[in-house]
Image (cartoon, rainbow, N blue to C red; front, side, top):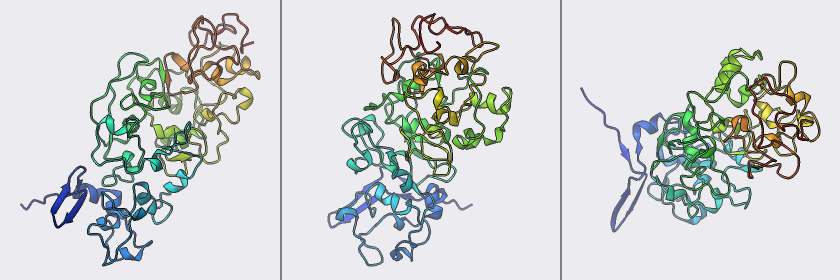
Length: 432
């Protein structure tokens, strides 16, 4: 029987009188590439007739192997040579097609939004532009992403030789956390590895948003999503997340636009419905909450809502800040997933729901009691202390000094058995 060998294609080849230099830092296997979206669909002939003689999927649509194309010289971006023999630098190459034509995934439109991935909200630094050419094929250590080498390029999250429609992250590199105790930073391997399961998107994000390489001006999200924490959103897909039937119902109108892969679970709002029970324990992805709209290409590219919050098309829930209270029920972003009537949250007793009966005042702010960064926290239900003998720090406590909130002397009650003043132990606060 005749066997077929896969062709090893060097990522770039430079030739000259002094010989040949080959770099196999990031090999593209012909079999993997031909199975990828680029290998089956990329064709730039519609935007440049120089490519008209190239078949769909030909390497020449992105790489200029011999410094000319059909006898002509396509001038590289910025008139500078490319280390990877591409026609443009980093994201400029990808956005040649992904700006609405010929690729149907218009990533440029999302990048044009006010809040863009890779842009530092505190300093205004755009890591995608300012640090062009910092990415290196085959980079696997944390030093490649530390404070001296910070960068955010398309190929940090996508492998263009392996990505498919079903799994656009296929072949990208990520790191796997080993969680220790509650509210402690996890440990990581020294080097990253390929991530081929789309449910493990968080491993790719942790390259920049964890203690592996330093999280810059943000927060340590690997610490926040630690599955040993008393509360967390289930990004890491824990088998037994800290959840119950008293964590509240979901909003059937928008929750499946945030997480469309679960849309087969129905729209019933009954507490015992498949939707509510299963969603409380469902594995999540960073892009369930972060991105553009449900009608845009999915992924954490850009958004009109800070900090890159995904808002389904037509949704009124567009705001998350420290000024939101029950008077803001029509705008609170969290209600894209969670039911705004607070059904089955367990905060109350058999006759009253304290969210709606005692926190319906102008000084009853969401972030008075709940973490301003709802990834995960060291207490159940993301509850923070804002007055008393212990006060939690910013950025998790975003209401410090403004109102009386949750006391460190709190007497924790079982779900469904809270009294009016349990959270304040009789003190004057937003319970009233």
